[in-house]
Image (cartoon, rainbow, N blue to C red; front, side):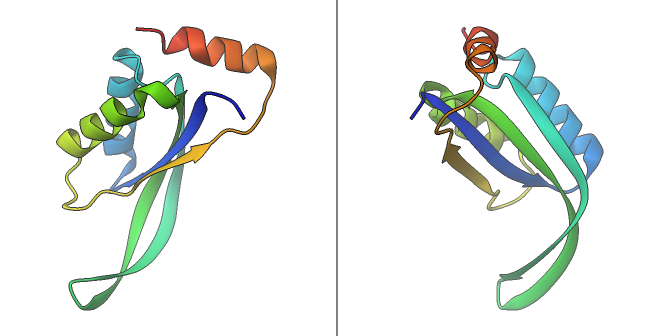
Amino acid sequence: MTDFLWVYSTHQNKSEALQMAKTLSKEKLIACANIVDQVTSVYEWKGQICEENEVIIIMKTQKSHFEALKKRIEEAHPYDCPCIIAIPIEDGNQDYLFWLKQATTL
């Protein structure tokens, strides 16, 4: 087990996702983000089944940054209930994990 997380979130469109990723990277809350455009999400919201096009952001960060990262996403996100899920990174390329730590050191 490492001290790093994969953080998954969804957004309305690519420009919003790009802006979020750039902001979080600049603030050193994430080392990097992968943006997956044009996914279809199906979910129940307020008694209705919804089908929407969304964009996924997969972010890599240190566990110690998660609460601040979550708070920052919640503040900037237009959704009432944004998807923010943390997944532990079990293992990985040690050079990459070293870079990840350096890129998110405040």
